[in-house]
Image: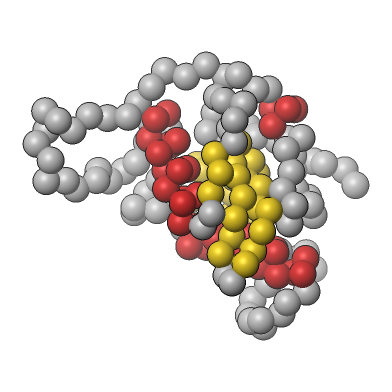
Length: 162
């Protein structure tokens, strides 16, 4: 299979590895180019918060809305850090999850959500998403297709267009 969709193409690209799916909870890890260690998560919510912290540390993509806080401004600091790439794209692309592996490229953080594209590496298919919720649904759908659990007969986003 040609791996034409296997690229990161952005400083904030991550490899999302799903290792387990128990009782509706996705567990796994994600990798980015700025550390060799994986960030492990036991729920998809933990993954989303971890990714959001990562994007905040890069300040890329820049969010169009600020977090609201009651903390005084002098105590509230931005998380931006200068980062140096430690892993090459080829090394990142060799990371794989037990159930599924995805390349996530968030292009925008607008309307308090994310927009971008996700590549399901196991099938070499790429789909654009318009929100975090839609991205999560794409991951869940891909895992359902692998395990052949057709729980919801809704629209199939990963199907080839005819």
